[in-house]
Image 1: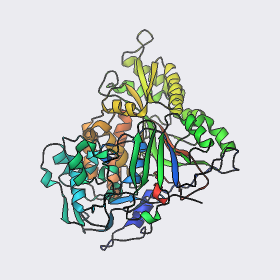
Image 2: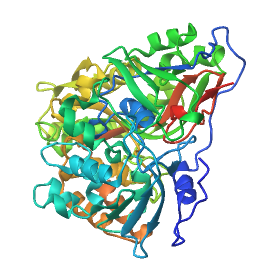
Image 3: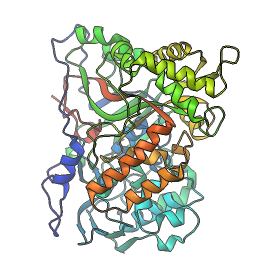
Image 4: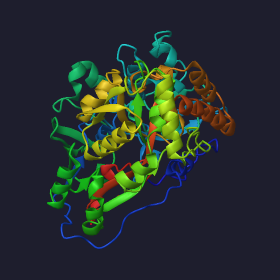
Length: 545
């Protein structure tokens, strides 16, 4: 939007600084070339058709944790701060705000806008929504992201009162929020779905049924018209959206595809305008034939395997280190994927704002053969041998790419005497099982919710709950994360968080494999698609030539 240079009355950085912070300094990396014979044409009938590489979890923003679901939510909800056309943070439900000199108190002024049923959106809707997230009985898995708000952690953990959560409606359009400590990432963090408002008057009337299409009410550019699980979710323009006149598409349909190859076929047939993922093994063909549609760009995310540290033998550090050392992550990137992913040695990707050089595993520069020998020795110390081999199940969510990576890594582990059984399910079941710790070793991926190392490192805190898939709970790590949260000086904070990451990379509750790039097919006829590090492409900013 147009407010990127805006500054608050106190002179503190407004969205201009936020936008630059979120930009990561990463350049565009679009593969160019001549149009292929199958290049499709985007529809001109006001309908945008998107191939989504996973089934939405829910239409309730407070119970969602996947990238595939967040795409729909970004179209339907308007948080205080939202995403702009280039993935930058821009004013959303709040048209402006002030920050107290000590950086602790934010006062937001809401823009004049309504829910899709015409009811005005008020500051009380936000107070209600955030209290709902923090209600211990709700079990919202992302609740810990709101712990930066004074009183939030105590209430969510059952140790405090809801009245002490420091988010207050001063009047219908003014919301005051007090933090536990100055947080340079707070405004960017407000783009996250856990801070999105839900309509109090509807939720209280319909309870859990409030997200059914016939009762669903939102304050974003689109509202839900229908949802056929595992097939499609259809959104239609919200005529009560404050900026509806500038929304080009009347409908946007998200089609669910676990099978990337099938999704690409529909794109080639002209039945989709966007594929949000591609099958890496077809990259050569795509480069040769759909170069004007293929978009590959840096993406702030990590692809890794989680070890279930709450179960034997993965509660044994020697086992986790051995399995991590024995994987040639450079070969995964260069020979298995071949689409520009960088081998990962840390959990925080390079280039994240408010950070320093990420902490890596200690064996990063040790030759692979030496790592394999050390891995065998560690397994022997842990009690595994030819007569008693380590065997376990490696889980991944259904995808050609995930399968290829899993097969390659299973082969690498076989070289150190480890036997692996592969098991795959659809994404919804996969992540539900991870949250329940119903796995031994499992594939996961994590994309930055906002541009700060805390967006990655919080996943391994003991208090994080279900999203801490590995169940890692190191008191020293937890203490460092707490210390970082209370540290105002950004340089000192970065060093503290790096110490925390170094601990995690020693203990390897998760095994880094590669840093993501975004890979998708986008119709050349679409206007307004800007590659960005958060891979945010909100439909309200897209149109046709």
